[in-house]
Length: 187
Image (cartoon, rainbow, N blue to C red):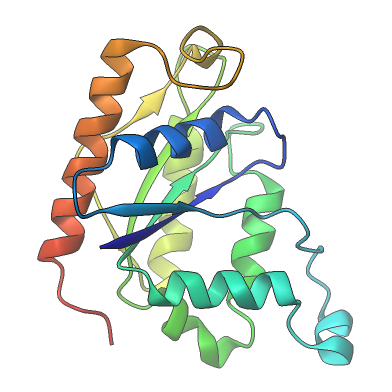
């Protein structure tokens, strides 16, 4: 089973990127988590789309997500909502509108997020739900994974070293993998 993970930050030292890498490491046997990048995706501009078409980075990400069994979104929380760079990526991925259902229709999606703050990314994850519903995805409402205090959970190489959190991430990715396996095939 192939699952794509998209971090909502461009920072090389992103806790959300590190969280997805931990999920990939802790995924159960038979599950591969491909951690994508949103670096290089321009701000959406209809004039740019009309002139040059879909940027290569967007087209590649769309194809990867369309072929996957599920999608993990690790979203930071900026000002109580979703980060602009990740929302921009999703907006590009719905272009042209006729292709949106190929990419997102019926796609199982799990949300998570890591932050140095104490409460995790509850508001951002909640804000993503209306977007996911509009896209026709199948959000997973199993185990919530709100990762607060991230600066104490990862080492200098951005490896998740906190054992209780590693256990939570392992249970979370295992639960999502079961949800994906039980979901009817997209099509």
